[in-house]
Every structure is written in C-alpha cells, then in structure tokens.
Length: 190
Image (cartoon, rainbow, N blue to C red; front, side, top):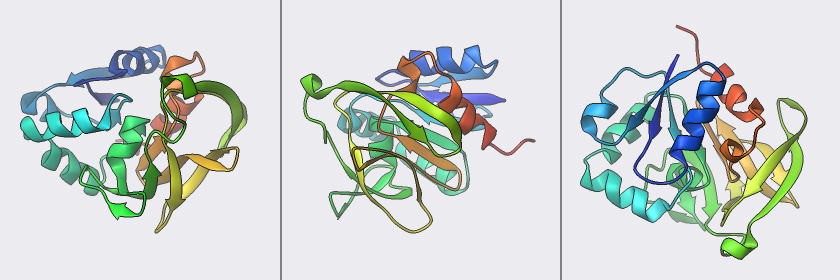
C-alpha cells in the first residue's frame, strides 16, 4: 500500500511517521509530478486551510485532487484537511476541495489557547482514543451519506462518507495508531 501525503504545509511529517510505524509506504505531494505517482490513498494534514487552498490553486493541484477524490480515491483529512473536504462552511458553499457532505465551523474552539486533549469513543474502534485539538474546527452537520464517527461535548469531531474520512483532531500527534489503521483498513485491497 502506498499513501500520498499532501506536504505543502502543516503536520505532514507526523502523518508519514504514523503510517511508517504501521508498515505503510508514503510519499510527499508538493507538485503535479508528485501527484501523478501511483497511490492507494491520500492524507490531507492539519495546517491552515486558506493557505493550503491558495497553494493548491497556484500549483494547479486543486482540480486534479478534487477529481480523483470524486472518482473514489480514499482520503483522510485532519483539522485543516477536514475543512478542505467540507462542502459547506457555516451553511454556505465552500470553495475548497468540497467533496464531502459535511458543514464545518472553522476555528470552533478558538485560538491556540483553546487547544485541548481528551479521550473519547470513536465508532468502529474499541475503547476510547486520544484526541488532540489545536485551533480545531468541528462539524456543524453531516448530510447525504456522511455519518458521524465521534463527538466531543455534543460537537461532531469525526465523520466518514464512503471513501472519505475526517477528524477535527490530530491523531498523528499521539502514539495511538488506531485511527490511521481504521483509515487504512477502509481502503479496498488490490
């Protein structure tokens, strides 16, 4: 299995380390040549969604990535990656990748000082998992075929829709590999 990790900004190295610990090959996507390499899935890391969208547009990557996700490429977005995949932001259409039937509230937990750590249940994973939130969004609503995977204090913090999965928290910043393994297990075997 080979997973592409968007490496324009954010916590991409931590995702790669997590995937390597699970025995999965990764490569960084920084330009169109990188994107054209064979891949079984994609990770969209945390970072700054506005900056990432601007860079994807400048590098002519937004539409090719959007197209492959729409055609079924498995994708896992964390924090900013969740924002990138959301079709709506506070009820209004999003101008990012916009492939997943979720409505997001950006910076829902406030600035850096609003960052926190907790442990909660995650649908499909036994027990609780560690969740680290850093200037995190949450999901206002899921619609269409999207389903809720986790909530914290009544707010939706993880969801999936077919081949797309998102978390408002950063599983790559904890030592628990179960969320990444959950994503990898959802990828059809070739």
